[in-house]
Length: 419
Ligand code: W6P
Image (tube, rainbow, N blue to C red):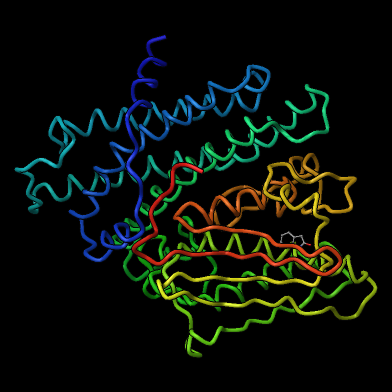
């Protein structure tokens, strides 16, 4: 139909990759005009990105596409696309020239500043509404895939095609979340510079010092503090799950080249926190199960921070949890890796109980149960790779597992749109 033609046409336009360095520059001169520049960028970019997600969903095999959760996803993405497109159409009349540049004659004097501020507030409200609408995406997706698997009557992993779709869809969705979250956080900082709203703001992570944060980016994030924070979250979940067992401790070591100084690195704390939390949870669980739940203490999980001459940062997380058998080493990054009967079970509960449980909101603003989709490691790898980094696992069966998170230096943190 006509609507879908418009979506397909919009989806054929190229998307513009995000650069962390650019996101940071935007925040350095934060004012109504720079925010308007970002609004203009999003106003053109978001319809493109939403339409691409709709096309991806529409290309799924029909047995999956026709499941109720996927139908809901398509409906929600279409609603969001239409709303964003409508704002975009209107905004041309307000402050944009026909080619969506900020009008040359636009001067933010006292007369029209209030007007533009109102238009910006309206856009922020729209972005917030869209954000809320898509909080359940991951749950819908997991539910749809599980119905599809049941329909196929197979215990096997989803096909390569589905894995590829999930990577592409989730990567695209994450890119949207980052740019929308950054804009809302910047807008928040502009209107509430003292930060009274920042603790509840979108994509905020429970880190201590919010001092120099630019939108959702921490230009000089205290990596060790973030690790401590993720450690406490993982230990909390561990303790909740096993109730009588004390979780393993985490010991952080700095490589020589870091010179004993505090490690500060530009990151999106919410993303890195999610990755660390996921890995630590797995390591703690593996350690306790390997050594026995009756033990009063466990070998530490060791974290090594190191850097290379180019300025990239490596975070290695090594556990003594017995490792994974070689046959399993490629699977952890598959979606729905968790199998309830498996002895090498990466996450805690099974997917269906996870869907039925009341979800808890994560730092990424998603209504996720604490774990259990079997999406955790796949999602973590995606997060690590989004800005050019990576996440790899090395396991020695009978001994332990080492996870390596590689983070690229600031200049190389560019959004990756392919595997
Ligand atoms: C394990 C399995 C695993 C997955 C991810 C991270 C750490 C670990 N340790 O035994």
